[in-house]
Length: 189
Ligand code: PCA
Image (tube, rainbow, N blue to C red):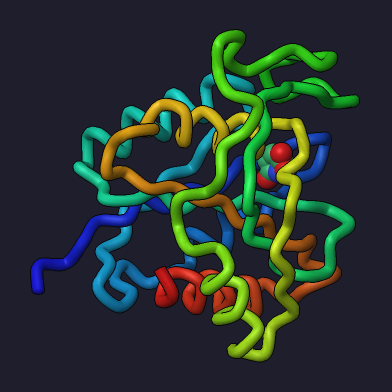
């Protein structure tokens, strides 16, 4: 069977941290997982811009699906995100200095979108690999949610599917386990 193309994104460091394990984990993934050929992309932690660059790359590489990864400090499990909500709301500025206080991402858009990749199967596959996993019902209201909402909004009504997975800080989960979790999740798509 012709391999399918998966755009896999990770993020740059933000919030004054020197590293972001989301890109380190994505960058360490093999180029082929199951039936998927991976195309990797590092994204800036910027409202609007991250999603714009991901959409452009998905089109340019003719991706069949987008699998995005970000850091969720404070979580100790790998958490596939079920939904993205239409709001920008964060106590810290993004890496371009933008700050939002409850503004909608898309003034005319729906309140929320469900991920269009099988997040429940992904969560079960991560757990089956022996790594803490939990389905999450909120991707927050910062740049990760902005990315997932905008991808789902932009590709709504098309064949393109998208999902987002948050991974913990490296002090809470070994990077090697986050990498294994992402492989298990991609195998479950
Ligand atoms: N985590 C942030 C943005 C970039 C990242 O890795 C978030 O959860 O929104």
